[in-house]
Amino acid sequence: MNKRFIFFAAICLVLLSCTTGNLYEKVVSIPGHQWAGNYQPKFTFNITDTATPYRVYVIFRHSEKYNYNNLWLRLGIQAPDSSAVSSVQYELPLATNEKGWLASGLDDLYEHRIGLTPESGDFYFKKSGTYTFTIAQLMREDPLQASYNVGLRIERKQ
Image (cartoon, rainbow, N blue to C red; front, top):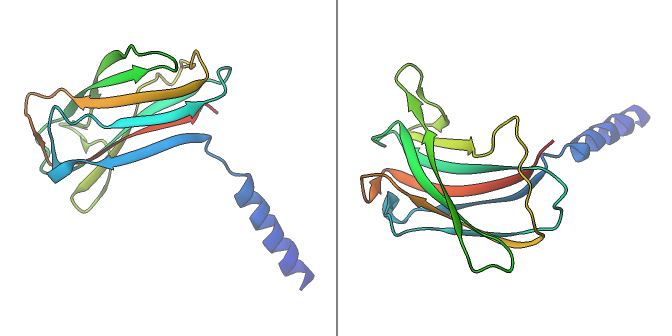
């Protein structure tokens, strides 16, 4: 009985000590699986620690009927106590001719988690407070077919 208790306690301690550093993650559904250019979901979260480096990821889910190897998007960023929105454009690779989809898949659905911050670089939030990010698709096809979800993930760099 004592050995079982010690084993169970050790397993619980290991599981509780695991952390991913996840600060924020939200994924929203794209209406009708057709991402219109004017549909720009907002992601609002609070930052309290400006001394810690962070990683920023975009999450994109689509079906196998998605017609492109990439996704062009614009990330809008509104900092605390500011009405100005800065924006950055990204081309995100989703597939290659050699490997196919660069994502995890289940049946005909694929999920990409693509880092917007370089692995070697650090990203710091300059002010503490509430940030609002928006994501807009910039593809020539409007609405963008076979697009199921889009999301944002912010995590502390380990």
